[in-house]
Image (tube, helix red, strand yellow):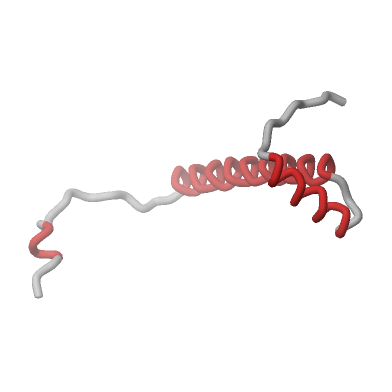
Length: 76
């Protein structure tokens, strides 16, 4: 397992220490969990985009020629 160095303000570190003690965990565990969530959210986003792209390729809908103007759309 690799080690990393992180620079944060002293006050932020102290608050994190107190909170992790209350929750019976460690700063290391919190950082690891947040990194995993960060990566998983990106993977989920990529999967969603690939799914949308596949849907659009399979779709029979086609975009036609623009037959309207902006003013026509916003006429009152």
